[in-house]
Image (cartoon, rainbow, N blue to C red; front, side, top):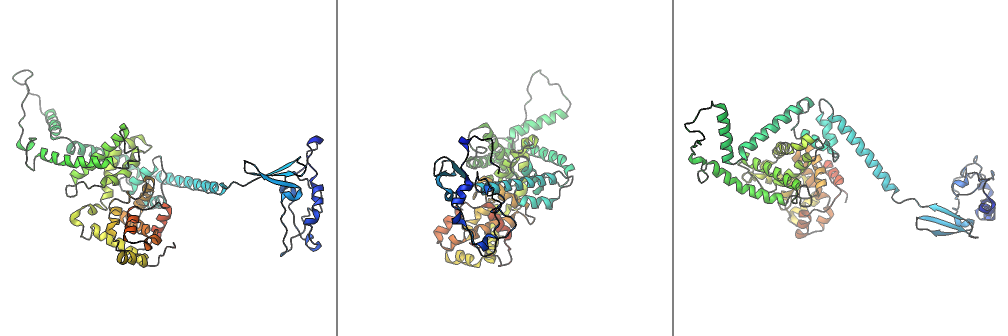
Length: 484
C-alpha cells in the first residue's frame, strides 16, 4: 500500500517503520531462522497504514523452517492501547493519542449466512429440476418420486401438481391432463347434485328434466297448477328405510359431527378457522367432501379425524397459483382424498380391526420394525414399561401424523409419504419407528406415565433428520443403530 504524498503534514500518519524499529528487538529471530522466514508480500495487509519499504524484511525467496514458531504480534506492540467500540470494532489508540487503528470483528453470523445461501442455491436447483420434469410431455414418475422425497417447494403450483401425479389423479402424459381434470370435475358436480341436495331439490331437478324432454300440453285452465303425486317413500315424515327423507335426516347427524370437527381443524391457521368469508368457504367445501365420502361409503361412513387427513390436501390445492385449479380445489381434493384413503381405509373400519388388513395388524408391523432395528428399546417399551403401540401409534397411523407436528412439517412429511415407491403405509411405519428411535434416551429413562406422555405429545424435532432416520431403516434386519 503506497502512502498518499498529497496529504498535508497535519494529517500525516505516524512513521510506522520507525515505531517498528523501536520494537524490533522483541520480534527478532535467531539468524538461522530469519533466513528461512516467508512474510506476506505486504505487512500492510495485516496492519492498516503500514508503509513497507524494507525489502530485506519482506524477503519472499526463503522458506520457513519446520519446527520453529513465530511469536504472534498484536497492534498494541506498536504503541497502541486497545478499546472496543459499539460497532464491534477493535480500536487501538497510539500512545500520543493522535492516531487510531480499527479492526472489524468477523460477524458471527457469517457462517450461518453462508449456510443460508447454500440452502437457497440448493432449493433453487431443486425447483428448476422439478419444473423441468413437470414440463416434459411424459412425466417420469420415478424421477418425480426422487425429487419429491427430498421435499417440495412451497408456493406456486409445484406441490399441488406433484401430489396429483403421485396420487394417480393426473396421468403421466401431459396431453391427457385437461381431459382427465374436466371429466373428474364434472363427475364430482353430478355427485353433489344427486347426493347432497334435499329430496325436494332432487325431485324438482328431475321434473324439470322430464318436462324438457316431453312435448308441451295445454291445461284446461290458464294458470292452473298441476298437482304432483307424492309417494310414501318421498314424504318427509316417512320412517321407511328406503325413504329419501329418512336417508337425508340420518346424514344430517353426520353433517353436524363434521361441522364440529371442522371447527377444531387447525384452529391456529386462518385458512381453516375464524369467521372470515374465506375460512367459511373452506370449511363448507371440506364438509361437502367428507359428507359425500360418507354417503358413498356407508360401511365406513365418516370417522372423526378424517377432517385432519383432508386438510393438507385441500389447503395445497386451494392455494395453487393456477386460478382454474384453485377454483376446482374441492373436486380435485375429493378425488385425491379417496385415493389416499384407499391405502388405509381398513384402519377406519372397526369390523376389520383384527383382520390382516386392520389397524391391529399394522400396529404389530410397527412393533416388529422397532424390534428389528433396536431390540433394547423394543424390550423396554414392550416388557418393562408396557407402553404398547395402540396407546400412541393408533393416532399416528390412522391420521397420517397430522396431529403430531405443525402444518408445514406435515406437508414436508407428506412429500415423503406420497413419493415412497412402496406406498404410503410403508413410509408411514418407517417414520413412526424413527420417531421412537429419535427419543430413545428419554424413553429408556422414563416409566409408563412419562413415556406415554412423551409419545402422545411428541416433542419438536428436525424433520429432515427424522426423515433421514426413517429412510435408513431396514424393516427385516437389526443392523441399524441410531447414535444418541
